[in-house]
Length: 183
Image: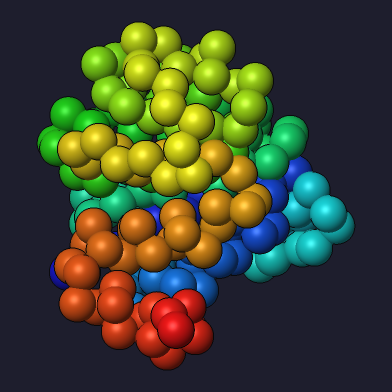
């Protein structure tokens, strides 16, 4: 298995980013946190800083099994404006590999036209950026290789959906038990 790349920009939503990274690492996935800013230290929308593993300018992403975009503002806007990331997302989609985004970040995929004809969800009000998508308002939506999440309250469900996509239902069920998410 390759790597899951999670992209960070100043103003990212901590709960969405950290829940996804944590849950995927619990599943045994190789996860790399990538800064799209000149600095590897990125500060979240609630003041929590993180030291990323890599910088986007030093990666080729050929081993990417999945690319994940956390929401938050202005983080999602910065992701949307990052040309290197936009190119990588287009290549990832063209290769039929998984892409996930939550909260405000699905706008990046919508602005690239990657969600046309797909069911998608996002933070309320950002659905106007989901060009050609069928907005569902669900907590988590999966359509083909695209997984979208609504917002911070969907962070755990979103993280589990990423694991299910890459590792299957049995691994996801096992994680839910370990994380006390089942009765």
